[in-house]
Length: 281
Image (cartoon, rainbow, N blue to C red):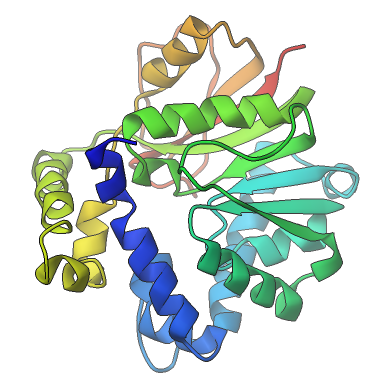
């Protein structure tokens, strides 16, 4: 693994250590909310944190056209589960859920979260040790979902995880993958993120920086991927998609992708986009 990729794992490891030392999930949300939803405060609770994920799951699945009765028969892999903000809700809707994440401490907290707010017997976990490879069998899932995770990876790792999502999903089944692309603010944010990630490796101050909310928000913005880049990469790898659709916020349209429907949903962040597609046989 390159030095740049190791640097990218610094805040995940710091966050994992922080969550591991907290006594309960409420303490994790209050004290290290910068990792998970950019909020901190003594009044925050794990229940509120999970409820925010529950609301987003319901909205996205509905607008993307995935019906509850069909989801109940599906297995799902979640790339970037964290401490289970969405995972608990997924176990309420899908027959089996695999939570995958880079940090093993996150997965331990994820199991606790699902134990309180989900259906734990439907959950299993998978440690993404290298940050880019899923330790799961080929064609083993009915759906692969990833939200606000691929933007935190180096470009090569984000594209590798996209390939992995399509490897582990069954032929004819779906991937729902969220990416971030360029906006005007990135003229400042993106260079600042590069500098921040370099500082994480500096002795003494690096560990402190990796635990600060402002630092992680800058440093985790590791890539910007346009649809044509992702789709072009898959084409070069001879990975065929069935019925791909691109989803944007209501004010955002991106050109350069011919023949693929572009849909809008007001719930999509202005700098985000989704790839919804089925894996070809």
